[in-house]
Image (cartoon, rainbow over all chains, first blue to last red; front, side):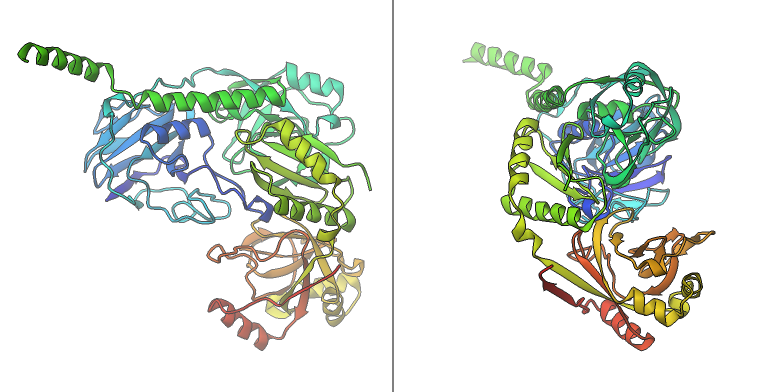
Length: 334
Length: 242
């Protein structure tokens, strides 16, 4: 009653929204990198918002289903196949017992997600099922998945109403250049005016130093007034820190809980998925917006997701037409 | 005391900067603010992360806007947080110093020009303020190590330091909460688990608390360790005024 991992892929872990509430004790928050894709995967299946999923990176896993369930695949395009046939993404997908779901390398984006209607049977550690490999806790034995691992399902759930309506438009991740909106601060006053101008008007390139902890960028030197060293303070998802070498590092899900370098800006929540779906050599440009604008964008996305939830709970056109025909026919016979 | 600044850290966090120097006074003010926030419970605050001189506040913009939380924090920071400042918790941490438990104690003694006994006496004779936790789960940044026993890190870091190891690195002393590589000079070991993911409270201490190292011999170390393994050991905690 679950899934067997036939191939682990490059870096496949169990994730949810993260282990909040323990950062002050030194625990990385961890959790999914692309929160939007994660939320869409769960909402396609009417799962609770924070239900655990598998997150995979650059090369996806191969899974065998030992019982029937419904899944939803979102995020970058890892060219999923069920028993060798291409399988759709951003849709509720019925899996039979014995089916093999295979992902290839990421054609677009760099992180993929799969949610399960039967929920993964992963113990909750400090309020979360997410994996943090650095501290070795949470998820499947505190580590990434590998061939031979077996994860049970928690429940039997093989029916969802409006099944045919559970289709959404795909998010696109194929742009090689992205504008990333940021809110300046908290320590932008440690950079010279020229340094800020460089940061906001230059193109930065994603290096291969890009993992769940952070994304190092290459590009023009960002000048500090004196130093970039600060007395360590708390970090957030999307902090853009600039050490003395003058190149930005965006801190991500597995970031260290505190950091000792000045943070010139913070990525707007709605643009973090764009950052984490980049690939090495992709380009990034930063644009400053106000915190009010960023919050407005965030609330708009919440509404957008609510809209998606409504769409997948309406009878689809095909079903509606049949019903209409049936109604008319009934009149003829009455 | 410097002026407190409320800084923006993205669309879901504020960073309150209490000063730019590490000192007990600033730290007390931060601990008091954390306590005050707990008491007042601002709807929408998700997490509060104290550091040496600052407090990071994560909030949910669906529940509370930037403007509103800023206003609430401004009001809260004006409150004279005297009540919070008086509470002091001191955790006794039993340590078996030297021998196989503290392989570097001879280094520390030699560097300080003292005997091992004197090093132990100095290390265990004062309470250390926990400025913050970070780096590893439950790793405590302690202030106030006696200058006489400051010791540089090992030139060649160990690949594995066992959980419970007590060591010195420069002007810092601390306890390793879990097995980890590191360059600290190891002077002893505690049988107490400062971090246990399976315990209801995984981390024993929090920022603003104090730690007191209490020397124990090997027999006592083993007795406590057995109690810890049975889940029956309770740390001695002194509560009182600062």
